[in-house]
Amino acid sequence: MGKPWIVLVFVLLLASGLAKTTINYFSFTTDQNHVKDLEALIATFEKENPELEVKYTTAPFDSYFTKLQTNLAAGQAPDVFELNYENFVTFASRGTLLALDSFLRQDTSLKDTFYPAALNAFRQNNSQYGLPITFSTVVLFYNKDLFDKAGVTYPNASWTWKDVLSAAQKINNPAQRVWGVYQPVQFWEFYKVARQAGGGLQVSPSVQIDTPANREALRYLVDKVRLKLMPSDAEMSGVSNEDMFLNGQLGMLYSGIWMFDKFSQAKFKWDIAAEPGGIRKATHFFSNAAVISRSTKNAEAAFKWIKFLAASPITVKTRIERSWELPALSLAQRALLDAYLKKPLPANREAVFDSLQYAITPPVVENQSQLQDIINQELEAARLGSKTPEQALADAQRRVEALFRR
Image 1 (cartoon, rainbow, N blue to C red):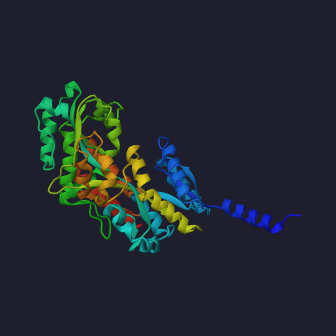
Image 2 (cartoon, rainbow, N blue to C red):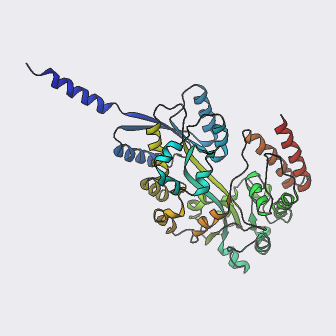
Image 3 (tube, rainbow, N blue to C red):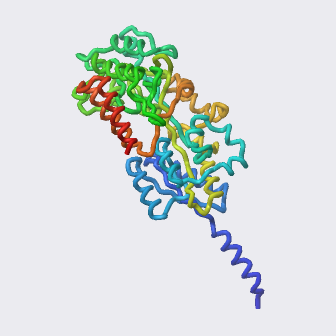
């Protein structure tokens, strides 16, 4: 007869090898183009951490937060999930996130790993609640061929609003279905243009929307419409501003660095510059973070995963090679970013990092969607000419004040 204790030990060892800790991960930054990229990263992570396994689910951005809220309400929160900056405040305020301070005290190197604005965006009440996994900024795209045809010097770091309007007027030729510039008149553009004017949107502790500087900013945005330097809705005929740029119909376009791949298909020469300013420069800063649910039973495992997502060299390499947004690393990690800078289009990729000097975050409150809806409605009225910029901002001020009195 054999030795049963040997069999028992073998069974126990086998069982312990199968009993992995599972990390449930919910993502909106992983679209259909990057599912295989995520799966490859998970395979690498699990190889490095054989005691852990990651199970993921994804959802499009427009339905992600509804599904996340439903899961949280049902007590089925994922261990790790993603938040964009604009929704972070709501979740942090409700106590649904695990503070990461104890982990960061143990791993002090992480403090210098990330671009400071990206890391600080996910702090509240002096605690860190997320690690930034991606960032992007808005830059000025320009069509070199149209600039050359109009005899206009290309945009550079010293450009101001005046230069934009002057170049747009020289390039503009609606009869040939070519327009000088396209800059949306909406919340995301207005809050940074207001800062460029020396003002800015403030909603706490007091509401400051209708100010002299902000009026100047909205007049600048609306002037592009009034002077017909931008195509009207009818002239666009349902074509997006990005497609109009790709078609060679726009001299300049304010858009995000996520458009690089699409515009690489253009049949004309193009490049980018950091956004021109008014009395100062400012640009929109987008960032997404990986956070840990406060209810997780696997906090240490979850932190390993979000650290891998945010700062692992293989993750950085994958994001850059696959154009899966841009890792939120500090310029001290320049060696990891060299592959990004060496890509041929656009030639002036340095402008992406130059613009980080001027990146600002929007005002964020718990009832963020209502705030944005009010401001967008008033900006749209100014764009369409049913209200003057002054009337629109006065009405926005009044309505936002009422919102916060509720």
